[in-house]
Image (cartoon, rainbow, N blue to C red; front, side, top):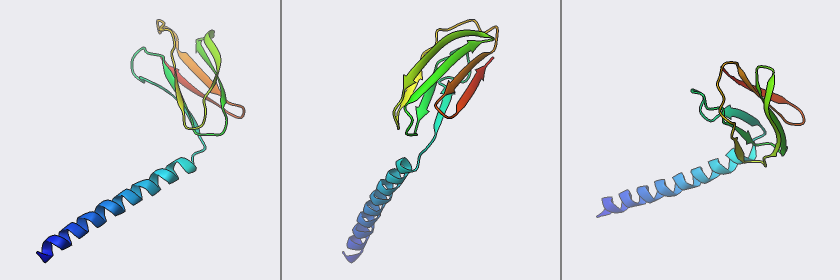
Length: 114
């Protein structure tokens, strides 16, 4: 009988400490982020849809989609901290390298697809 109480106590202690650690971990994961990223939704294949993910205080982003030297699409978007937005690009025949240039006020990032 005493062994059952000890086992139940250990299980309860494990569950409570795990829940507390997960809570603390989630809290700290969101507090120290200060970055943004751009990436293709499907890196392989002909799909040109891409995602802008924001974890900064900046809200305004501008992107340009280029096929060689020809601009296919250009737009300004607002993405708030902790959000990500998928940008849909009309499919084209990939005969030339497609460049996607995303910039905020201070920096710019580029991704390419052949």
